[in-house]
Length: 313
Image (cartoon, rainbow, N blue to C red; front, side):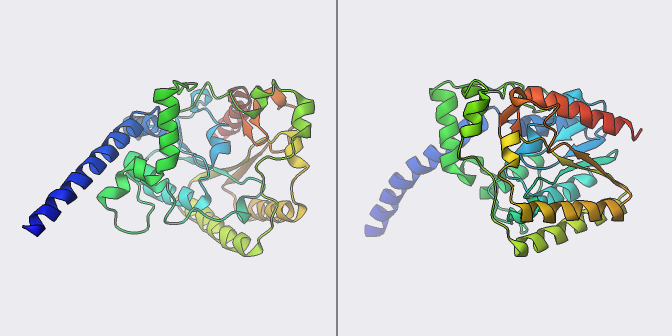
């Protein structure tokens, strides 16, 4: 009798919890998502895709495939590092028979920031939308549940979208947000004096030679893989606003640049689009914040990339 009561009380407790999570998962999946759009584009155009864009949010917001002649999919995303890039590339290689070019990011401190690792929360998104296993283990049902991958993050997104109706998103058919202007710089009306006085913004200033050695080893492994598979690599450094450059750590910058010089000497299949310090073409109204372009800046950057890709034809 006691066991029956315990089972009844357990069910009464767990059923509402499970139903609550199911509701939150459904709301999460109903959020506007570049992942869902990328999934549809990937499934519909896999045989035509020639160019694959990887990297972090800097390339996610810098490259709009709509403005490229080459059939392109941009799978860059926030905080996505080279280890995730490499797993995605290896998983998609056989699914993209016409793949010729891979766009990689090497930002100022890319080599001195920790890799994502097997427990990166976005692994669930990669599995759910792209059917790519970055967990480095067999996957389970829970691994495809998006809300549970980062509940506080998605709770805020759900609140903003469904309650506050803050819907300043305009994804095109390539998953690029054409309305992503509403950032730090626009909020300050692109006032350069105020931007110059800003004391804090996200930039890594802490050198870490151990992480550097680990990250560069994987980077060379990725370049070797690309060379063996006859892929052209375009290494990009996305534009940064002028105040960003004043905060760079010279040691981090020097080590990064030494790798780029070595790569240039060692790999014939690697090209560079180095616009990180281009403060002539890229003005304050091209930026979302100190380290990200807005759609106007993306148009300029994508046109430069398009010219480089067309030179390969």
